[in-house]
Image (cartoon, rainbow, N blue to C red):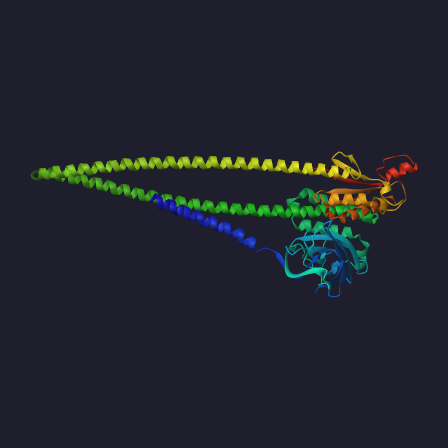
Length: 533
Protein backbone atom coordinates (compact mmCIF):
# COMPACT_ATOMS: atom_id res chain seq x y z
CA UNK A 1 0.00 0.00 0.00
CA UNK A 2 2.78 2.44 0.94
CA UNK A 3 4.71 1.64 -2.25
CA UNK A 4 1.58 2.37 -4.33
CA UNK A 5 1.05 5.67 -2.47
CA UNK A 6 4.63 6.84 -3.18
CA UNK A 7 4.25 5.90 -6.85
CA UNK A 8 1.07 8.01 -7.18
CA UNK A 9 2.77 11.05 -5.61
CA UNK A 10 5.79 10.70 -7.91
CA UNK A 11 3.50 10.45 -10.95
CA UNK A 12 1.70 13.68 -10.00
CA UNK A 13 4.96 15.59 -9.44
CA UNK A 14 6.54 14.32 -12.68
CA UNK A 15 3.44 15.33 -14.67
CA UNK A 16 3.47 18.84 -13.16
CA UNK A 17 7.21 19.23 -13.85
CA UNK A 18 6.76 18.16 -17.47
CA UNK A 19 3.95 20.64 -18.09
CA UNK A 20 5.81 23.51 -16.44
CA UNK A 21 8.98 22.80 -18.38
CA UNK A 22 7.16 22.48 -21.71
CA UNK A 23 5.47 25.90 -21.41
CA UNK A 24 8.63 28.12 -21.53
CA UNK A 25 10.18 25.85 -24.16
CA UNK A 26 7.15 26.29 -26.41
CA UNK A 27 7.33 30.03 -25.93
CA UNK A 28 11.05 30.09 -26.72
CA UNK A 29 10.44 28.13 -29.91
CA UNK A 30 7.91 30.73 -31.07
CA UNK A 31 10.80 33.21 -31.65
CA UNK A 32 10.78 36.37 -33.72
CA UNK A 33 13.63 35.87 -36.19
CA UNK A 34 13.04 37.74 -39.42
CA UNK A 35 13.39 35.68 -42.65
CA UNK A 36 14.66 37.63 -45.63
CA UNK A 37 16.36 36.49 -48.83
CA UNK A 38 19.15 38.86 -49.76
CA UNK A 39 22.68 38.87 -51.18
CA UNK A 40 25.65 38.29 -48.86
CA UNK A 41 28.96 39.33 -50.44
CA UNK A 42 32.50 38.30 -49.46
CA UNK A 43 35.02 41.10 -50.11
CA UNK A 44 38.70 40.34 -50.67
CA UNK A 45 41.13 43.19 -51.41
CA UNK A 46 40.25 45.43 -54.36
CA UNK A 47 37.67 48.20 -54.12
CA UNK A 48 34.27 47.01 -55.35
CA UNK A 49 31.25 49.08 -56.41
CA UNK A 50 27.95 47.63 -55.23
CA UNK A 51 24.58 48.95 -56.42
CA UNK A 52 21.86 49.49 -53.81
CA UNK A 53 18.30 48.89 -55.08
CA UNK A 54 14.99 50.05 -53.66
CA UNK A 55 12.55 47.60 -52.10
CA UNK A 56 8.76 47.52 -52.49
CA UNK A 57 8.58 50.23 -49.81
CA UNK A 58 10.56 52.65 -52.01
CA UNK A 59 11.20 51.28 -55.54
CA UNK A 60 12.53 54.67 -56.69
CA UNK A 61 15.36 54.63 -54.14
CA UNK A 62 18.84 53.78 -55.34
CA UNK A 63 22.45 54.07 -54.24
CA UNK A 64 26.02 52.99 -54.74
CA UNK A 65 28.46 51.65 -52.16
CA UNK A 66 32.23 51.47 -52.57
CA UNK A 67 33.61 48.68 -50.38
CA UNK A 68 37.32 48.04 -49.84
CA UNK A 69 38.71 45.31 -47.55
CA UNK A 70 41.83 46.14 -45.50
CA UNK A 71 43.39 42.95 -44.19
CA UNK A 72 45.93 44.62 -41.93
CA UNK A 73 43.22 46.68 -40.26
CA UNK A 74 40.77 43.76 -40.38
CA UNK A 75 38.05 46.13 -41.58
CA UNK A 76 35.85 46.64 -44.62
CA UNK A 77 35.65 50.37 -45.36
CA UNK A 78 32.38 51.55 -46.91
CA UNK A 79 31.64 54.81 -48.77
CA UNK A 80 27.94 54.82 -49.70
CA UNK A 81 25.69 57.34 -51.45
CA UNK A 82 21.90 57.03 -51.57
CA UNK A 83 19.33 58.95 -53.63
CA UNK A 84 15.58 59.38 -54.06
CA UNK A 85 14.77 58.79 -50.41
CA UNK A 86 11.85 60.53 -48.75
CA UNK A 87 11.76 61.69 -45.12
CA UNK A 88 11.45 58.68 -42.85
CA UNK A 89 8.25 59.96 -41.22
CA UNK A 90 6.40 59.11 -44.46
CA UNK A 91 6.47 55.46 -43.26
CA UNK A 92 4.80 56.44 -40.00
CA UNK A 93 5.20 58.83 -37.11
CA UNK A 94 7.45 56.24 -35.40
CA UNK A 95 10.35 56.87 -37.82
CA UNK A 96 12.76 59.84 -37.99
CA UNK A 97 15.95 58.72 -39.75
CA UNK A 98 17.66 56.06 -41.88
CA UNK A 99 20.32 53.61 -40.64
CA UNK A 100 22.80 51.46 -42.62
CA UNK A 101 23.18 47.82 -41.44
CA UNK A 102 25.67 45.05 -42.15
CA UNK A 103 24.16 41.56 -41.73
CA UNK A 104 26.30 38.40 -41.77
CA UNK A 105 25.05 35.00 -43.01
CA UNK A 106 25.10 33.90 -39.35
CA UNK A 107 22.48 36.57 -38.57
CA UNK A 108 24.74 39.08 -36.73
CA UNK A 109 23.60 42.67 -37.25
CA UNK A 110 25.88 45.75 -37.09
CA UNK A 111 24.61 49.35 -36.95
CA UNK A 112 27.02 51.17 -39.30
CA UNK A 113 25.65 54.68 -38.91
CA UNK A 114 22.93 57.18 -39.76
CA UNK A 115 22.11 58.91 -43.05
CA UNK A 116 21.36 62.65 -42.92
CA UNK A 117 19.19 63.43 -45.94
CA UNK A 118 19.70 66.54 -48.03
CA UNK A 119 17.04 66.76 -50.72
CA UNK A 120 16.52 63.01 -50.74
CA UNK A 121 20.24 62.18 -50.95
CA UNK A 122 22.89 61.35 -48.37
CA UNK A 123 26.41 60.02 -48.04
CA UNK A 124 27.96 57.92 -45.27
CA UNK A 125 31.53 56.75 -44.70
CA UNK A 126 31.84 53.89 -42.25
CA UNK A 127 33.52 50.54 -41.65
CA UNK A 128 32.80 47.07 -40.30
CA UNK A 129 34.99 44.24 -39.07
CA UNK A 130 33.00 41.68 -41.09
CA UNK A 131 34.27 40.39 -44.43
CA UNK A 132 31.09 38.65 -45.61
CA UNK A 133 27.88 40.65 -45.17
CA UNK A 134 24.78 42.11 -46.78
CA UNK A 135 24.01 45.85 -46.75
CA UNK A 136 20.48 47.12 -46.07
CA UNK A 137 19.01 50.52 -45.20
CA UNK A 138 16.03 50.81 -42.84
CA UNK A 139 13.84 53.58 -41.50
CA UNK A 140 14.35 53.90 -37.72
CA UNK A 141 13.11 56.01 -34.80
CA UNK A 142 16.66 57.11 -33.83
CA UNK A 143 20.29 56.47 -34.69
CA UNK A 144 21.15 54.30 -31.62
CA UNK A 145 18.80 51.40 -32.39
CA UNK A 146 20.24 47.96 -31.69
CA UNK A 147 18.13 45.92 -34.13
CA UNK A 148 16.80 46.81 -37.61
CA UNK A 149 13.12 47.58 -38.13
CA UNK A 150 11.03 45.94 -40.83
CA UNK A 151 11.01 49.15 -42.94
CA UNK A 152 13.76 48.05 -45.38
CA UNK A 153 14.03 50.65 -48.18
CA UNK A 154 17.36 49.68 -49.80
CA UNK A 155 19.44 46.50 -50.13
CA UNK A 156 22.58 45.56 -52.05
CA UNK A 157 22.42 43.95 -55.50
CA UNK A 158 24.76 41.38 -57.08
CA UNK A 159 27.88 43.22 -58.34
CA UNK A 160 29.01 42.53 -61.90
CA UNK A 161 32.62 41.63 -61.02
CA UNK A 162 34.71 38.58 -60.19
CA UNK A 163 36.53 40.42 -57.37
CA UNK A 164 34.01 39.22 -54.83
CA UNK A 165 32.23 36.01 -53.87
CA UNK A 166 28.44 36.22 -53.86
CA UNK A 167 26.29 34.05 -51.56
CA UNK A 168 22.62 34.12 -52.56
CA UNK A 169 21.14 32.67 -49.43
CA UNK A 170 18.26 33.17 -47.05
CA UNK A 171 19.72 35.22 -44.21
CA UNK A 172 18.14 34.89 -40.78
CA UNK A 173 18.58 37.72 -38.31
CA UNK A 174 16.80 38.88 -35.18
CA UNK A 175 15.10 42.14 -36.02
CA UNK A 176 13.19 44.51 -33.78
CA UNK A 177 9.85 42.98 -32.78
CA UNK A 178 8.10 46.20 -33.78
CA UNK A 179 5.77 46.17 -30.80
CA UNK A 180 6.65 49.82 -30.07
CA UNK A 181 6.12 50.88 -33.72
CA UNK A 182 2.37 51.29 -33.73
CA UNK A 183 1.77 54.65 -35.44
CA UNK A 184 1.71 54.10 -39.21
CA UNK A 185 0.18 57.48 -39.99
CA UNK A 186 2.13 60.43 -41.36
CA UNK A 187 2.54 63.00 -38.53
CA UNK A 188 0.46 66.16 -38.62
CA UNK A 189 3.59 68.33 -38.46
CA UNK A 190 4.46 69.62 -41.95
CA UNK A 191 7.73 68.58 -43.58
CA UNK A 192 9.08 72.13 -43.42
CA UNK A 193 8.51 72.13 -39.66
CA UNK A 194 10.44 68.85 -39.39
CA UNK A 195 13.34 70.45 -41.23
CA UNK A 196 13.42 73.28 -38.70
CA UNK A 197 13.67 70.95 -35.70
CA UNK A 198 17.14 69.44 -35.08
CA UNK A 199 17.20 65.77 -36.09
CA UNK A 200 18.62 64.69 -32.70
CA UNK A 201 15.67 66.36 -30.95
CA UNK A 202 13.13 64.49 -33.12
CA UNK A 203 14.94 61.23 -32.42
CA UNK A 204 15.15 61.95 -28.68
CA UNK A 205 11.37 62.48 -28.54
CA UNK A 206 10.79 59.10 -30.15
CA UNK A 207 13.46 57.34 -28.03
CA UNK A 208 11.83 58.58 -24.80
CA UNK A 209 8.40 57.51 -26.12
CA UNK A 210 9.76 54.00 -26.78
CA UNK A 211 11.26 53.91 -23.27
CA UNK A 212 7.83 54.81 -21.86
CA UNK A 213 6.12 52.12 -24.00
CA UNK A 214 8.67 49.62 -22.65
CA UNK A 215 7.34 50.46 -19.15
CA UNK A 216 10.55 52.28 -18.20
CA UNK A 217 8.71 54.29 -15.52
CA UNK A 218 8.11 50.99 -13.73
CA UNK A 219 11.28 48.98 -14.36
CA UNK A 220 14.00 51.73 -14.51
CA UNK A 221 12.46 54.93 -13.07
CA UNK A 222 15.78 56.69 -12.28
CA UNK A 223 17.23 56.45 -15.80
CA UNK A 224 13.80 57.15 -17.31
CA UNK A 225 13.50 60.41 -15.36
CA UNK A 226 17.05 61.36 -16.41
CA UNK A 227 16.14 60.70 -20.07
CA UNK A 228 12.96 62.82 -19.76
CA UNK A 229 14.90 65.64 -18.06
CA UNK A 230 17.56 65.58 -20.79
CA UNK A 231 14.80 65.77 -23.43
CA UNK A 232 13.19 68.69 -21.57
CA UNK A 233 16.55 70.50 -21.45
CA UNK A 234 16.98 69.96 -25.19
CA UNK A 235 13.43 71.28 -25.83
CA UNK A 236 14.14 74.38 -23.70
CA UNK A 237 17.48 74.96 -25.45
CA UNK A 238 15.76 74.67 -28.84
CA UNK A 239 12.98 77.08 -27.90
CA UNK A 240 15.55 79.58 -26.54
CA UNK A 241 17.42 79.54 -29.85
CA UNK A 242 20.53 77.60 -28.80
CA UNK A 243 22.80 76.45 -31.62
CA UNK A 244 22.01 73.13 -33.26
CA UNK A 245 25.16 71.46 -31.89
CA UNK A 246 24.25 72.24 -28.27
CA UNK A 247 20.66 71.04 -28.79
CA UNK A 248 21.97 67.90 -30.51
CA UNK A 249 24.45 67.19 -27.70
CA UNK A 250 21.74 67.32 -25.04
CA UNK A 251 19.33 65.33 -27.21
CA UNK A 252 21.96 62.61 -27.78
CA UNK A 253 22.32 62.24 -24.01
CA UNK A 254 18.55 61.73 -23.83
CA UNK A 255 18.66 59.12 -26.63
CA UNK A 256 21.48 57.19 -24.91
CA UNK A 257 19.59 57.14 -21.61
CA UNK A 258 16.33 56.14 -23.32
CA UNK A 259 18.02 53.20 -25.10
CA UNK A 260 19.47 52.11 -21.76
CA UNK A 261 15.99 52.34 -20.18
CA UNK A 262 14.47 50.18 -22.92
CA UNK A 263 17.19 47.50 -22.58
CA UNK A 264 16.91 47.38 -18.77
CA UNK A 265 13.08 47.43 -18.84
CA UNK A 266 12.87 44.56 -21.31
CA UNK A 267 15.36 42.53 -19.26
CA UNK A 268 13.45 43.17 -16.05
CA UNK A 269 10.09 42.48 -17.69
CA UNK A 270 11.47 39.12 -18.86
CA UNK A 271 12.70 38.42 -15.32
CA UNK A 272 9.25 39.30 -13.93
CA UNK A 273 7.63 36.90 -16.39
CA UNK A 274 10.03 34.21 -15.26
CA UNK A 275 9.18 34.88 -11.61
CA UNK A 276 5.48 34.60 -12.46
CA UNK A 277 6.18 31.29 -14.19
CA UNK A 278 7.98 30.05 -11.06
CA UNK A 279 4.99 31.13 -8.95
CA UNK A 280 2.71 29.11 -11.24
CA UNK A 281 4.99 26.13 -10.83
CA UNK A 282 4.91 26.52 -7.05
CA UNK A 283 1.10 26.57 -7.18
CA UNK A 284 1.05 23.34 -9.20
CA UNK A 285 3.42 21.74 -6.69
CA UNK A 286 1.13 22.89 -3.87
CA UNK A 287 -1.85 21.27 -5.57
CA UNK A 288 0.15 18.08 -6.09
CA UNK A 289 1.02 18.14 -2.39
CA UNK A 290 -2.67 18.50 -1.52
CA UNK A 291 -3.43 15.48 -3.73
CA UNK A 292 -0.76 13.56 -1.87
CA UNK A 293 -2.43 14.51 1.43
CA UNK A 294 -5.74 13.16 0.12
CA UNK A 295 -4.04 9.89 -0.77
CA UNK A 296 -2.56 9.75 2.72
CA UNK A 297 -6.04 10.12 4.23
CA UNK A 298 -7.30 7.25 2.07
CA UNK A 299 -4.38 5.14 3.30
CA UNK A 300 -5.31 5.94 6.93
CA UNK A 301 -8.91 4.84 6.33
CA UNK A 302 -7.71 1.58 4.78
CA UNK A 303 -5.51 0.93 7.83
CA UNK A 304 -8.51 1.54 10.12
CA UNK A 305 -10.58 -1.01 8.23
CA UNK A 306 -7.69 -3.49 8.47
CA UNK A 307 -7.49 -3.02 12.25
CA UNK A 308 -11.25 -3.68 12.53
CA UNK A 309 -10.80 -6.90 10.56
CA UNK A 310 -7.97 -7.98 12.86
CA UNK A 311 -10.16 -7.27 15.92
CA UNK A 312 -12.94 -9.41 14.43
CA UNK A 313 -10.45 -12.22 13.81
CA UNK A 314 -9.32 -12.01 17.46
CA UNK A 315 -12.92 -12.33 18.66
CA UNK A 316 -13.45 -15.38 16.45
CA UNK A 317 -10.34 -17.01 17.89
CA UNK A 318 -11.68 -16.47 21.43
CA UNK A 319 -14.98 -18.14 20.53
CA UNK A 320 -13.07 -21.06 19.04
CA UNK A 321 -11.02 -21.51 22.23
CA UNK A 322 -14.16 -21.52 24.37
CA UNK A 323 -15.70 -24.15 22.12
CA UNK A 324 -12.57 -26.29 22.40
CA UNK A 325 -12.61 -26.06 26.19
CA UNK A 326 -16.27 -27.17 26.22
CA UNK A 327 -15.50 -30.25 24.15
CA UNK A 328 -14.21 -32.53 26.90
CA UNK A 329 -14.42 -35.58 24.74
CA UNK A 330 -11.93 -33.99 22.28
CA UNK A 331 -9.20 -32.84 24.68
CA UNK A 332 -6.40 -34.50 22.80
CA UNK A 333 -7.46 -32.90 19.56
CA UNK A 334 -7.86 -29.64 21.41
CA UNK A 335 -4.30 -29.90 22.74
CA UNK A 336 -3.02 -30.55 19.24
CA UNK A 337 -4.96 -27.62 17.90
CA UNK A 338 -3.77 -25.40 20.73
CA UNK A 339 -0.18 -26.38 20.02
CA UNK A 340 -0.63 -25.49 16.35
CA UNK A 341 -2.37 -22.31 17.37
CA UNK A 342 0.54 -21.35 19.61
CA UNK A 343 2.97 -21.94 16.77
CA UNK A 344 0.96 -19.73 14.48
CA UNK A 345 0.75 -17.04 17.12
CA UNK A 346 4.51 -17.15 17.59
CA UNK A 347 4.96 -16.83 13.84
CA UNK A 348 2.59 -13.85 13.77
CA UNK A 349 4.44 -12.25 16.66
CA UNK A 350 7.78 -12.73 14.91
CA UNK A 351 6.37 -11.25 11.72
CA UNK A 352 4.97 -8.30 13.68
CA UNK A 353 8.41 -7.69 15.24
CA UNK A 354 10.07 -7.90 11.80
CA UNK A 355 7.51 -5.48 10.38
CA UNK A 356 8.04 -3.01 13.24
CA UNK A 357 11.82 -3.24 12.78
CA UNK A 358 11.47 -2.68 9.02
CA UNK A 359 9.25 0.37 9.59
CA UNK A 360 11.81 1.81 12.03
CA UNK A 361 14.62 1.22 9.52
CA UNK A 362 12.62 2.88 6.76
CA UNK A 363 12.02 5.94 8.96
CA UNK A 364 15.75 6.16 9.75
CA UNK A 365 16.70 5.89 6.07
CA UNK A 366 14.16 8.55 5.09
CA UNK A 367 15.54 10.88 7.79
CA UNK A 368 19.13 10.26 6.67
CA UNK A 369 18.17 10.87 3.04
CA UNK A 370 16.47 14.14 3.94
CA UNK A 371 19.49 15.32 5.97
CA UNK A 372 21.87 14.33 3.16
CA UNK A 373 19.79 16.21 0.58
CA UNK A 374 19.75 19.32 2.79
CA UNK A 375 23.54 19.16 3.28
CA UNK A 376 24.09 18.65 -0.44
CA UNK A 377 21.92 21.64 -1.35
CA UNK A 378 23.77 23.82 1.16
CA UNK A 379 27.15 22.67 -0.17
CA UNK A 380 26.07 23.31 -3.77
CA UNK A 381 24.89 26.80 -2.82
CA UNK A 382 28.20 27.64 -1.13
CA UNK A 383 30.14 26.24 -4.07
CA UNK A 384 28.13 28.31 -6.57
CA UNK A 385 28.69 31.46 -4.48
CA UNK A 386 32.43 30.79 -4.29
CA UNK A 387 32.63 30.12 -8.03
CA UNK A 388 30.66 33.28 -8.81
CA UNK A 389 32.87 35.39 -6.52
CA UNK A 390 36.03 33.92 -8.07
CA UNK A 391 34.68 34.49 -11.57
CA UNK A 392 33.81 38.11 -10.79
CA UNK A 393 37.26 38.65 -9.25
CA UNK A 394 38.98 37.22 -12.32
CA UNK A 395 36.85 39.30 -14.66
CA UNK A 396 37.62 42.47 -12.66
CA UNK A 397 41.34 41.62 -12.68
CA UNK A 398 41.23 40.99 -16.43
CA UNK A 399 39.46 44.33 -17.06
CA UNK A 400 42.01 46.15 -14.88
CA UNK A 401 44.95 44.50 -16.63
CA UNK A 402 43.50 45.21 -20.08
CA UNK A 403 42.95 48.84 -19.09
CA UNK A 404 46.57 49.13 -17.92
CA UNK A 405 47.75 47.55 -21.19
CA UNK A 406 45.61 50.05 -23.12
CA UNK A 407 47.11 52.96 -21.15
CA UNK A 408 50.65 51.65 -21.67
CA UNK A 409 50.07 51.21 -25.42
CA UNK A 410 48.62 54.73 -25.83
CA UNK A 411 51.34 56.33 -23.70
CA UNK A 412 53.89 55.00 -26.20
CA UNK A 413 52.15 56.97 -28.96
CA UNK A 414 50.92 60.25 -27.45
CA UNK A 415 51.25 62.08 -24.16
CA UNK A 416 49.08 60.55 -21.40
CA UNK A 417 48.16 62.19 -18.10
CA UNK A 418 46.33 60.56 -15.21
CA UNK A 419 42.83 61.65 -14.27
CA UNK A 420 40.65 61.11 -11.22
CA UNK A 421 38.87 58.11 -12.78
CA UNK A 422 41.37 56.87 -15.37
CA UNK A 423 43.69 58.67 -17.81
CA UNK A 424 43.60 61.21 -20.65
CA UNK A 425 45.43 60.98 -23.97
CA UNK A 426 46.31 64.50 -25.22
CA UNK A 427 46.54 65.38 -28.93
CA UNK A 428 48.22 68.84 -29.00
CA UNK A 429 47.66 71.63 -31.48
CA UNK A 430 50.50 70.46 -33.77
CA UNK A 431 48.48 67.29 -34.58
CA UNK A 432 46.22 69.48 -36.76
CA UNK A 433 46.63 71.83 -39.70
CA UNK A 434 47.12 75.33 -38.30
CA UNK A 435 43.77 76.98 -37.42
CA UNK A 436 41.89 74.15 -39.16
CA UNK A 437 39.96 71.13 -37.93
CA UNK A 438 41.65 68.53 -40.16
CA UNK A 439 44.54 66.36 -38.94
CA UNK A 440 48.06 67.14 -40.11
CA UNK A 441 49.73 64.71 -42.53
CA UNK A 442 52.84 64.48 -40.36
CA UNK A 443 50.95 62.71 -37.56
CA UNK A 444 49.44 60.03 -39.83
CA UNK A 445 51.74 57.33 -38.42
CA UNK A 446 50.86 58.19 -34.83
CA UNK A 447 47.14 58.38 -35.59
CA UNK A 448 47.26 55.01 -37.37
CA UNK A 449 49.04 53.50 -34.35
CA UNK A 450 46.45 55.06 -32.05
CA UNK A 451 43.58 53.74 -34.20
CA UNK A 452 45.07 50.24 -34.28
CA UNK A 453 45.48 50.21 -30.49
CA UNK A 454 41.86 51.32 -29.96
CA UNK A 455 40.66 48.88 -32.60
CA UNK A 456 42.40 46.08 -30.70
CA UNK A 457 40.47 47.06 -27.52
CA UNK A 458 36.88 47.34 -28.84
CA UNK A 459 35.23 46.98 -25.45
CA UNK A 460 36.44 50.30 -23.95
CA UNK A 461 34.19 53.36 -24.01
CA UNK A 462 35.83 56.81 -24.19
CA UNK A 463 35.02 60.46 -24.77
CA UNK A 464 36.73 62.66 -27.38
CA UNK A 465 36.73 66.25 -26.09
CA UNK A 466 37.67 69.17 -28.31
CA UNK A 467 39.24 72.29 -26.70
CA UNK A 468 39.89 75.67 -28.24
CA UNK A 469 41.46 79.02 -27.45
CA UNK A 470 39.13 82.04 -27.17
CA UNK A 471 37.76 82.82 -30.63
CA UNK A 472 34.42 83.63 -32.22
CA UNK A 473 33.57 80.02 -33.19
CA UNK A 474 35.37 78.19 -30.39
CA UNK A 475 32.61 75.57 -29.88
CA UNK A 476 32.41 74.61 -33.58
CA UNK A 477 36.21 74.70 -33.95
CA UNK A 478 36.73 72.36 -30.97
CA UNK A 479 33.90 70.04 -32.09
CA UNK A 480 35.30 69.86 -35.62
CA UNK A 481 38.73 68.76 -34.38
CA UNK A 482 37.19 66.20 -32.02
CA UNK A 483 35.00 64.84 -34.83
CA UNK A 484 38.02 64.58 -37.15
CA UNK A 485 39.79 62.41 -34.58
CA UNK A 486 36.63 60.27 -34.12
CA UNK A 487 36.23 59.73 -37.87
CA UNK A 488 39.88 58.72 -38.22
CA UNK A 489 39.71 56.27 -35.32
CA UNK A 490 36.40 54.78 -36.56
CA UNK A 491 38.13 53.76 -39.80
CA UNK A 492 40.14 51.24 -37.78
CA UNK A 493 37.11 49.27 -36.69
CA UNK A 494 36.35 51.12 -33.44
CA UNK A 495 32.53 51.08 -33.03
CA UNK A 496 31.07 54.58 -33.00
CA UNK A 497 28.88 53.49 -30.10
CA UNK A 498 32.10 53.21 -28.01
CA UNK A 499 32.97 56.89 -28.39
CA UNK A 500 31.27 60.14 -27.46
CA UNK A 501 32.31 63.31 -29.24
CA UNK A 502 31.96 66.56 -27.28
CA UNK A 503 33.09 70.16 -27.53
CA UNK A 504 34.41 72.05 -24.50
CA UNK A 505 35.11 75.18 -26.51
CA UNK A 506 37.37 77.53 -24.57
CA UNK A 507 35.81 76.63 -21.20
CA UNK A 508 38.72 74.45 -19.92
CA UNK A 509 42.01 76.29 -20.70
CA UNK A 510 45.38 74.91 -19.67
CA UNK A 511 47.08 78.29 -19.84
CA UNK A 512 45.81 81.78 -19.07
CA UNK A 513 48.62 83.41 -21.05
CA UNK A 514 47.64 85.27 -24.20
CA UNK A 515 50.89 84.45 -25.93
CA UNK A 516 51.01 82.34 -29.07
CA UNK A 517 52.39 79.40 -27.07
CA UNK A 518 49.70 79.78 -24.41
CA UNK A 519 46.88 79.86 -26.98
CA UNK A 520 48.39 76.84 -28.81
CA UNK A 521 48.49 74.95 -25.50
CA UNK A 522 44.72 75.48 -25.11
CA UNK A 523 44.02 74.20 -28.64
CA UNK A 524 43.99 70.44 -28.10
CA UNK A 525 41.89 67.27 -28.27
CA UNK A 526 41.68 65.02 -25.19
CA UNK A 527 40.61 61.37 -25.28
CA UNK A 528 39.20 60.54 -21.83
CA UNK A 529 39.24 56.93 -20.63
CA UNK A 530 37.42 55.79 -17.46
CA UNK A 531 39.03 52.96 -15.47
CA UNK A 532 36.89 49.85 -14.85
CA UNK A 533 35.29 49.47 -11.45
